[in-house]
Image (cartoon, rainbow, N blue to C red):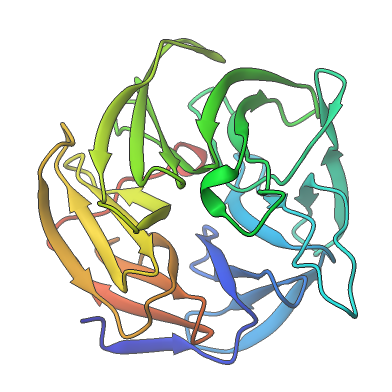
Length: 288
């Protein structure tokens, strides 16, 4: 079980990402902001986005790109329009993408940069009723940092976490309603083959964010399971589980001096925790 608490008191943390100076950035969906945690543990508000900042990743330009799902609606707060945002190193926030192919974004969730400096992002449609299984199909989109974007796949029910295999030839996307991960072959930048099932977390477990290690193993958060589920490079059979104190684990990333530390966001308890992993984490394309 992860035994090091890095930060606590966060408002539904998600989307962990490191900059090149070793600072950890974590979105706070409920608070509508992004927190920055220095290597010494000092925490500050890096940017106020409003809405519900979700997945986050640094681009090769040093800007932080955030999928904003619009926020959690409540009696005091209405849900805002979904968008993809671009945040400068100074913390200035601008809306980069608000629609794709003439259709407004629904609830952007997560994103990942490719070797060309562009990124894929997921745009699930929140279920209209309380039944999560009734969520309609969402979109996987491909975008450039100038704001141009297009849909590249429709059909997954609540597409969530997204990331690349270490060789950059495969795109893996979580399908939260079914509990499965799917792999797409990347035929060209922004061109995907048909998906094939990569892994299955099991009934009642919601796959959320994930990360690859350098050996190609996938470490995927199972929301409501209290575990990070580990699958080998070929998917299929589960290799291991990392147990967490909080059932609502949402996302992971690698960092630390040797890039062997796994950082996990625990949304229910409002924490970021860390544990050591046997392999180095995959270096993201935006940092290569």
